[in-house]
Image (cartoon, rainbow, N blue to C red; front, side, top):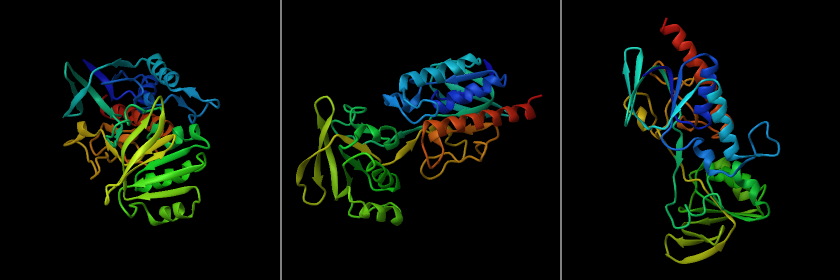
Length: 306
């Protein structure tokens, strides 16, 4: 089976790429191993996507992305892409069941949050446990919030969450932050923030939603409970870049390196969304990446396959 373009991943970036490619009359296939929407599926309400001032249910937004891509001819198949091979100007994408030939590939496999792997984390996901302050912070106005982490993201998001919570605790396993000094200075000056250093979260508990956490001191091993309504976890990301290893250039943290057209060091292979290193991981930025990559792929195909 041969296509002009194969998009790997049906999140916002991948579906936007498929939409733009379809509108440009490229025969487009989208391969998705799991569920449509990517990390949007972990959120109940999306309040920060342009055009929906009252917010929109995540499942409704996902459906809109999906239907829009299909309207312009994208074919969507639920198969996991396992390997990409470059043969001349062509690319072969292998799944467990099939091989698909194409002229260009856009990889939109995203990144997965590093997790604490403690009891309650999975159970309360979307019920007080979150990995996105911009997405979910407004739901916890005047509540006590816990932020876990010590890097730039944790410190910046803790400051951001003070716009909503009446108190924000930062739990960090070390006595010093890895974040940039200018960011750390802000949290020391913020009266809403309390630091819980050299502590680790051992459990997140509650009934139908988060009600608190159990903390352990890393030195004394003393255990105590802390009441809260939300736990925001910012201990890093793991890019899903495995399919590009040995093919494209990847940095020491696993992020794929691309140019302004979202193209990797391999002509005709693009990487978008959370898969690439970027300062803001949001639906709108992933969608923008997808549009850019699709049009770059169109130009590439026009120039190389006549």
